[in-house]
Amino acid sequence: MIHQHIYAAPKPGMSEADFQNYWLKVHAVQFAMKIPQIAMYKLNLRLACSIDTNPIWGGCAEIWLRNGEEQLASIQTPQFLQGARLDEPNWAAFWMTVGLDCDNHSIKAADVPASAVKLIVLSKRNLKNDVADYQKRRLAELTAGATSIPGLLKCQLALAVEGSYAIGESRFDEVAHFWFASAADAEAAFASAARNVMLPKAADGLINPSQVYPMLVKEHWLIGPEERPLVQGA
Image: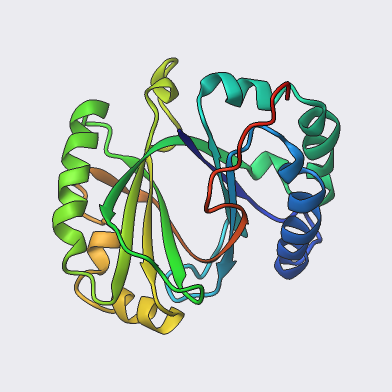
C-alpha cells in the first residue's frame, strides 16, 4: 500500500478558512473521491498552535493506493485529468503543493477518539546519513523516544518510498504522525522535555533541524478507514 501525503496552501487572496472549506466540501467530494483507484482518503486540516506560527500549508491530504500500477492509473483517469487537476487552481496555490509517497510504520498503535488531534511533522534527513541507515536508525530513535511524550495516544512514521530516490534526492524523507486526545494535550507535550522527540533540533542528528515542518491538524476521513474496493474496469 502506498501512503501518499499531499500538502497544499491557499491560492493568493483566499483565506485559510475558505481554502479548508473548499478542499473538504467541494474538491474532495466532487472531484478527488471520484478517482476510483483511491482506496482510502483522509484530509488533515491545520489548527492554530504554538509551534506553527508562520504556516506554509493549510492542510495535508493522505491518500492510500494499493500499488504503483493503480497509482499510475489514477492520474490517467478522466476523474483526475478533467476533474481534480483542473479544479486545483480554484482553491490551491498549486506551485506550493508538496507530495511524498511513503511506506507507513506503526510506532505506537491504539484507537483514538473522534475528537483527537494529530501533529504531523514533515522533515528532511541530515544528508550525511545514507537513506537505508537513516531509515533504520530513525525508526529505532522514534520508537524509543515516543515513550517519553506525555499524552501521546498513537504514533506512526511514514518514510519515503525507495522510488523517491531513483533520480537524485527526495525533497523530503518522512512524515511523523503523533495523536493526542485534544489540542490542550498536544500543547502540553510541546511544552515538555519530549518536544525534541517530535521536533528534532540537534545539528548532528538524523534530521536536518532547518527542515522540520510541524502542523497540528484535525482529521477528516472521506474514504475509510476501511479500504474501498476497486471497481473492476476502472
